Length: 266
Ligand SMILES: NC(=O)c1ccc[n+]([C@@H]2O[C@H](COP(=O)([O-])OP(=O)(O)OC[C@H]3O[C@@H](n4cnc5c(N)ncnc54)[C@H](O)[C@@H]3O)[C@@H](O)[C@H]2O)c1
Image (cartoon, rainbow, N blue to C red; front, side, top):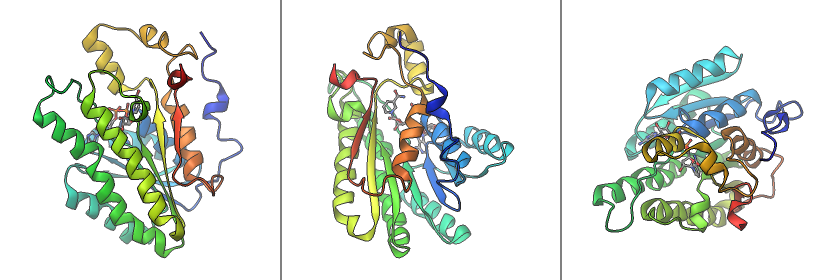
């Protein structure tokens, strides 16, 4: 077993102001990885818009951030609702006058192979994992471009690149997130909008915990799959997202970055 995550992964000591005066929208921010991203950006000075369909978890995350002295507001809406996506971005711009960072993090994992998966699961996977990227980016990009640029970070998956068995909807929609990221970057780099994606491996979050509970497997079972010896933490993914979204990554555009504890190269 490799050492547990060190303070280095969560420290903001040297980066505390990377997002000062920036407005950052994070979807799925009530969940495991999204809440870690929201907290990380807020600790580094951002005003974070905590977006989630689950208003209670979004409220909790926003309260934690404001309780620590950060700035957060909640936007509760369903990403499957295209007009709600546009409205959410318009509301942010109306309130703040700008939108600097968009993190398309929300996602669902409907399991099954082609024959086991229902048509509803297939369509829901696209409705939540893919279509909102089109609507949110379409709403946000003109605002970013008009101010000389911005950063978009999309949460894909290791399985975007190496399909997992029995997860056809997830594999295909997450591959679409990668293709969308590269296409958008190619088209809008000249406007100063940097678009990148992260591809996490096994990260311990409510999504994964629910799967473990259903299948009777343990965290140790997952740890054993990872060459690094343990699953990743949401905070480790958040640190990578924050880097890509920050001015420390000015030449990163169209990049797809794996964060897997070497699982992808095993
Ligand atoms: N946990 C992992 O091992 C892992 C690995 C690779 C990629 N990912 C990706 O990371 C992202 C976050 O995953 P997580 O593990 O934190 O999951 P999670 O289930 O903890 O969080 C997902 C969040 O998205 C929200 N959400 C779901 N449907 C929504 C909708 N229709 N409208 C608005 N919000 C909605 C949920 O309410 C939840 O808060 C997802 O895109 C997931 O596919 C996770």
